[in-house]
Image (tube, rainbow over all chains, first blue to last red; front, side, top):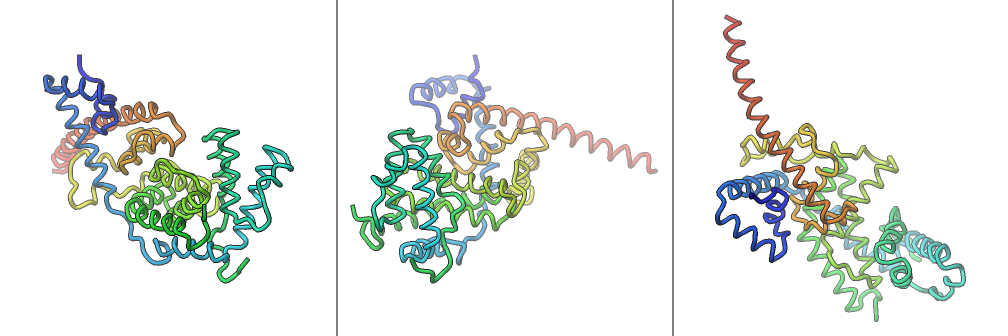
Length: 154
Length: 191
């Protein structure tokens, strides 16, 4: 009985557990057909990987420098609009799930947006579970103009 | 815990971002570029992913698999752009944007020539996405998280894609034989 191709692909990707890997390896040592199939799977994977191996150039404001400058701008309070939008989205989520009194518990005057995100996340993780909390976080963070207008300080 | 700008914790997060960027940015950009069919959107997706990573880490979130997390954010960002209709068309046809193995100097086999047209050989959108993410060395669990699937489904989709690719390779070889024969017959008729 030959190993199924799904199992060989998983084996090739190191996605089979230790026990299953040992079983497949034992079978491969005795079966030329499955060894051929595995070789084919490996070569196709190599072909696909080399096809996508060339990464576009990343530099300047679109590269790491851009990310770090957006982070610096955020930390310096230059992304005022995005920070305030983030806070208001978080407040809205807390209010939706837990009612407006919860907002007063979570928020305090002068709280930074990322701190409010952290506190909100903790509550959401506990009450909604990690997957739903992640979905809410995605929703809250999507479409914010993080870099913000340069020079605009909160 | 002090998460204010300039604190050791924040500096640590920035270093984490620098290290991750060096390792993963190329793959994310390549993936997002192919998905978006637009390099500008791909760059935006890359920046968005890393900036969100910074925010979530600054908020104290533990990210178990940063690579998968970044790919997922970039993936969702590109899809959101499509929904918003903001910049360009996004879709499974994105695979056409995948760097073409046939144009790659080192490539030359039938497999390479056929893999550039995964859409034409009948791979489903999910299968194409799985294949693409696998070529970026994402674990099945990470691919599942990016695409919102179960890890077991990823294995099944990859197996099906592999089967279709192999079938296409076989048919491609046959087609080439037919083509060669047709050329020969055409020559004969031309005389």
